[in-house]
Length: 328
Image 1 (cartoon, rainbow, N blue to C red):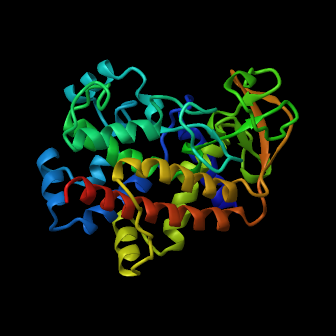
Image 2 (spheres, one colour; image 1 turned 90 degrees about the vertical axis):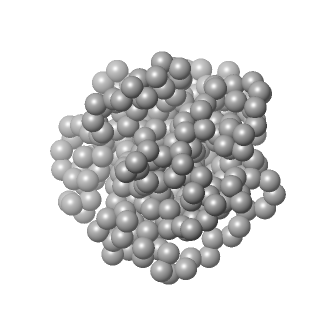
Image 3 (cartoon, one colour; image 1 turned 180 degrees about the horizontal axis):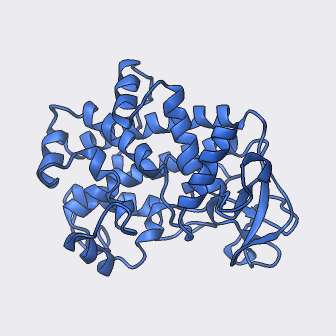
């Protein structure tokens, strides 16, 4: 438990202040990329992907580009990254949607959704890679390479429960289900910023200092624990172990343009499990942000890491299937 607590604290220190914090961190995204890379090997999709990537890049490396562009933790920005930032001032918001976790379905223009949320941006990326033209298909004017870099990353993000499911609370820490966006007024119902304002109980960490964000826990600690429990020492080894086990990942039905909506619904169902037994305390303050102390069930590290393992596998297999659907 002390080792896990230290990992939670480290993850909290790494989480970005904004709601656009990274999902899965680099190892989780690279694992998704490595799985898909193996599954499309030798296909038309693999050749099309290679044509859009730079020399030395692969899907695992491409999968972290959309997080690397947020800051300089991957190294100095390239001219390509600077151009992206200038053209996409809302890029942080592309990584998530905020549908109340209690719901079953993602509905366009409903509470927590946005025209630039993860579902809509994924649909735009698919359209661009299918060479659809026009403002309606590509309002952000993504290039095919940008669309690929985004798509590879966001397919990972959409499988992280807290990048689809929003958490809304009142002052007493009760989880609320707002019916309209206007009800989230910061007085009776608060947006917990994708779990970033929900802080793990101090008993779970060695020191009360630093962030104890629930979002950070899911980004870093949970997938790391999932990989270690699988016997993997690296994202690439995790991908090899997963594929060797030949997991049953059901194929998505219908046109691939609609798959992001299906995945959002599926991740909402997973969020119900991720939130099971989780309770919040009364409103407090964490620096400049409102916060609520969070308590987790005693077996949460085990159950959450099992969910994360399944989600990472889905992400890799679904990314491969999507790329093959785009380039059959």
